[in-house]
Image (cartoon, rainbow, N blue to C red):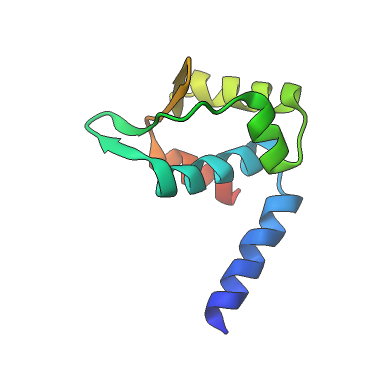
Length: 98
């Protein structure tokens, strides 16, 4: 029952949070499944487009782009062609939780 409650809370947060919270949550989940931990953070070497993240979070590509730019400016993530690096996982989790 506790697991179901936790899952329900996560699903509710995924549709009710801000765009930044939803994008951060999606990145945390992707890092847990596909991330490659390294000395500078967690590297996601998957071709993840803004449109992909928008679809995952129920947002627009423009909103996702703004959220990602803010995270990059704050030093939480770094991005490049076909990769995303999470440089501050604690800050990303905090952002995802609101």
